[in-house]
View 1 (cartoon, rainbow, N blue to C red):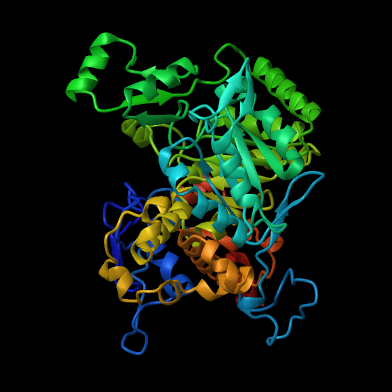
View 2: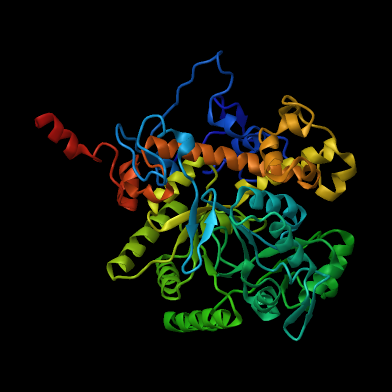
Length: 546
């Protein structure tokens, strides 16, 4: 299998738990004291692009050729000469073709283009309590960076303060908080996307959002995600709340109204109850019926006033993948997010996560193949985002290249949540009066943080970048988790700029499948990419024989 290491001596990073393909721990904790690469990058930013202890060390990659099919079994090509896709005003001189001049800005969408500064977006941050607790850090950070953020499913349904009458929302304070927090610092880059599942549709989320926020919000239909093949779940520990959720129309397991379940909770034999969402399309028995229902729903949303609509699909098989790409294309949606197995979650059945669905690289490779078929039919294929266990700048480049020219964004779930936790924990220690508000989990700074200092200005490499953006007086209102997210995004951006400069592509639109190759034969076969030594081999021999 692909080589995944628990520690990286060159960067000075280590995983608390077992690492997965992304380099994140399989189980990522909000109270973690460090220090995986993403965690440490949220403090030190672009410093983590380079080996530690400069002037005391030399460093060399182990460079082991990975087995199996994963994003780690792709390698990035580099070119000796030339410069392509130069941003406007940039010449091809050696003085101007430097990596800081690489443009990472882009856009997606049909008639209305949504701009972003870095080609990343958050995963769906929905009804899990961890998403609610750290939302301010996530949303403010996303707005400052200029990237899309997704409000996941069921936010209204689990809100005890929400008022829903006859299938229509009268009051939704938590959803309002989510949207308004992002819009407070929104400056024209990025966007906020509100996801909608079966229960959300029944509760009238679409109607509420369009009436209150108009075209400031993109609405996302949800077919699934890469972590599981059933609806969203949360765990609740309060019996009354579990009963409330059941009465609001959710599937609650075990049934909190059964006397034996109530007794087991009182005695502590059952400590929590799971709330589940419904599966979509169970009443439909054919692709044609799904297509009709999907198109009808899109038409309804357009009639309500939505000018931008997206679709999120999970790691189902090839039939569902083809349906998602074709239907989203025919419906002229603005974005299709394709989430492969390896995706993260706040809560899912564990062995389902381990064994269901199509791994990300295989799914994404097929997405490109299927999109190309539609292009050959003369269709303008929907813009795509790839998701599923992606966390680093090389993952971003590889995903964009694998799906080029259709892939515009890389969707990151847990990777973009880590800085929110970390910054909040730091904030709770430095400003004890804020600890409860920001959900800080630490009583003191761990050595992995205090080695850099004891103030935000010392700890976060991008503190003054954020200060320059919002103004010194506004910094008191910026969560440290948002500064941490900004710092991580800066590292990802600069790392991407360096990789793009290495392949002589100075704009995102120039990235292509020719910029990557397969590190083993199995990956070559499954992705359709060239094998390392076969790419340009004919040209090389022509040079030698010429």
